Image (cartoon, rainbow, N blue to C red):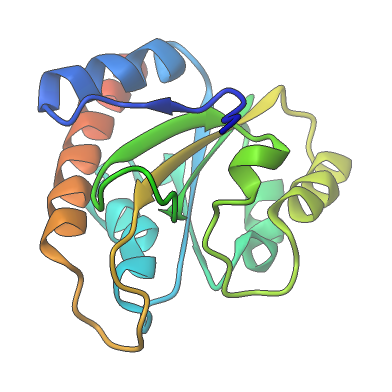
Length: 173
């Protein structure tokens, strides 16, 4: 299967931090966290954002990126980082991927809204001049209605939030 620019990050904390650091370090970023509170693991992106200490660098986008375009327009950034749940059959729940946005990766994004991610990004590019979009995806396990997040996804949320807090702390302090 062609995965475009997709990278599966190591599951250990140091490997994950190194994987993210190569992509994010020293960049002026805004993190858009996408998800739906009532669809179990689909809330992963929202939960990561809630744990990030650097709130000036985050935007919660419940139900889809299109719902926070105005808030993103008012931020000053060069790179848009989107955190969302992904469903890729041949990786395990809780694994984390990093990729530039391309058609292959967009096909794996969990969408609970009708506007494709690429369409929302194209609209945003008309409002804000930024260089690129980076996707950080957490492989989901459960997408039924409910508030419980599966154990592998909970673990990924905690690791990802901790790694991002370290990277943002090194970059912005």
